[in-house]
Each structure stands twice: as C-alpha cells, then as structure tokens.
Image (cartoon, rainbow, N blue to C red; front, side, top):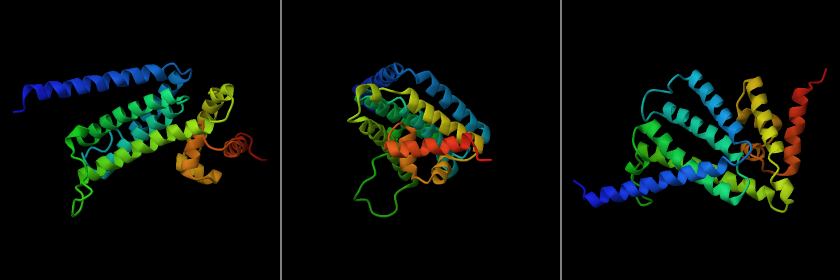
Length: 228
C-alpha cells in the first residue's frame, strides 16, 4: 500500500493538469472560429465512427491504434487553425497533451503514466505497449511543432495580416470540402496538388509560404470551375 501523502500528491498534480486544460480551452474559445472548429471535429469524428462503429475492438491492436490516431489527428488538425499567438500555441500544446492521455486510455485502457519511459540503454526488442506510447507522443510533438510552424509563417507580417483568420479558415474549410467531395484522404489531396504532406498540412493550418498557399488556392479554383 502506498503512503497516503503520495496519493494526495498525485491527486493534486492531476487537479492542476485538469485546471490547465480548462484554461487552455477558455483561451482558444476567444478565437472567432472556435465553434466552427468544434463542429468540424464533431462531424469528422462521427464520420470515422460510422466507417468503423465503436472502432476496432481488440485492445492494443494495430487497427485500434490507427483508429485512435485518426481521432487524435482530427482534433490536432482542427484546433491547429485556432493558433494565432504564442499564448494560443501554448494552450494548444496543453490540449494536445491532454488529448494524448485520453487517446492512450481509449487505445489501451491504461493511463499514460502507467507505462514506464523507454530506456535508451535497454537491450532487446521494445515491448509493444512502449512502442505504441512512443508513437503517440511523437505524433503529439508533431502537432505542437506545427503550431509553432504556423506562428513562424506570421513573422514579419503586419499585425492585421497575422491576425486575419477568416481567409485561413476559408482555405482549410475548402480543402475539407474538396476531400469529402472527392472521397479521398488529405494525403492524397497533397499528392494531387503536388506538394509534400508536411507542407500541405502547414498550409491548411494557415502556415507555409504564400506561393504555396496560392498554389493550393489555384488548384481548388480548378476544382470549383472544371474545364469544359
């Protein structure tokens, strides 16, 4: 049995983490497109649920992990579009950390803290549970870096242009609409446009070079107005 004070310390840590997540969402809620992002998250997760009701049922299986990562990426991609300042990037990182914890429980039934760190000095194959944990954390770090990549694209631009969100949201929405209409993945859309996946998601999140953004917009215009 663990000492009572150890339990109380863990409860205090969990309470502070929960409060930090609440504050993070409260900050993102100030974004004018927060409600639209929440709606898109809901609709896309519903679509994922319809394609695989309940998700793959076998706990700790690769299909279930891929399903959970799909849900993780949906929220990561949509909430990324709400990042418009360093403060919102920090809030986004807090939300993604909390999401990773919830996704790992959905995948494994275990809290993230129950899995020991992967030792760089361990010999032999890494246990599957640790591999899945590391893959999830790597994916979380990817989205956190994308938030800062989005901010870096704003550097040097006038304040009015940096804070312009409508155009960014419109481009992201049009890409979502095109992907749904063509019944393809975002990866396939990136291939059709002729840009890398990282560049594609950077542009979709409001980052990337302006020339690349124009290239994406031109491609979408061709889809809207097909040649006779």
